[in-house]
Image (cartoon, rainbow, N blue to C red):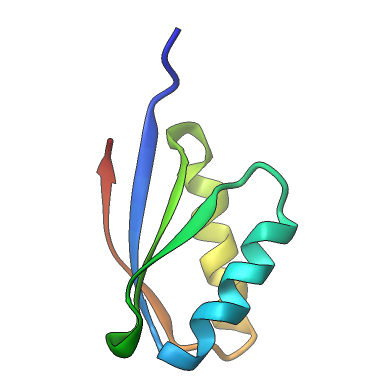
Length: 77
């Protein structure tokens, strides 16, 4: 049985990538963060596709804290 996986592409201030990654790690099982271009604040969250709503909520929580982070796109892997 294969579980569908999604990649959520993000843009944020480069200085916030580490903070976002550590917070994501604290959410056991939600996914992991991959840095695509740290200088330009590009990163991605790899997550089970059935947890996309939770990832959107996670990003919303970071935005509520004042972080300048946006979801650029979502792709199924």
